[in-house]
Amino acid sequence: MQNKMPEIPLHDIKPLVEIPDYSFYYFLALLVVGSIITVGVLFLLIKWLRSRKKFDIRKEHAKALQNIKLNDAKTAAYALTKYGATFKNDSERHQKIYQELLDALAKYKYKKEVHEKFDANTLRLIELYRGMIDV
Image (cartoon, rainbow, N blue to C red; front, side, top):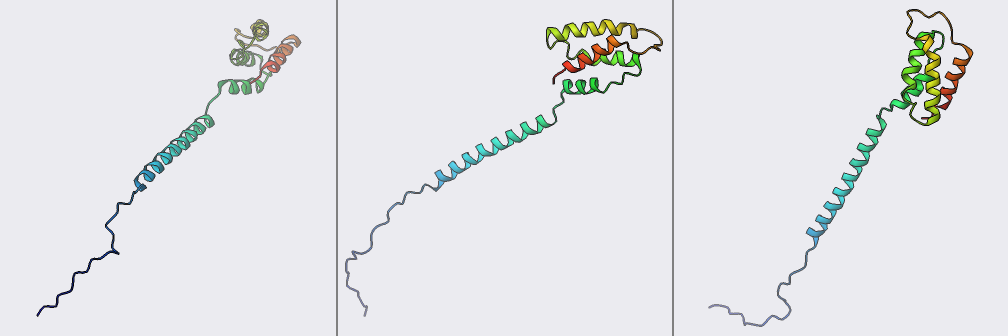
């Protein structure tokens, strides 16, 4: 004997309903935003590292011009000519003073030995040109 259960219709169980799942789209959005932020941070970091180690020839030459010892006239004349040329094209005034400086320094260069010191006019031109330099 089999126990037969009467077939009673069940009204309290509903069929399966599809629930919309947006988690994949949230993940993609998070991935895109994260990638943009990472690329931005890397760009700023690389830019900062490059600017930190940037070599500026004008700053180096300005520093060298200020540190030239005027005791040895021949060596100082060559150094003033070399480092001063960096700034000669800054303005017309720079060009004029640099040309005057070259003319004044000519008597201290191109000789085997120079025993004389800079005269007052040359020292004035050297200090004027050093003071004009702006880096």
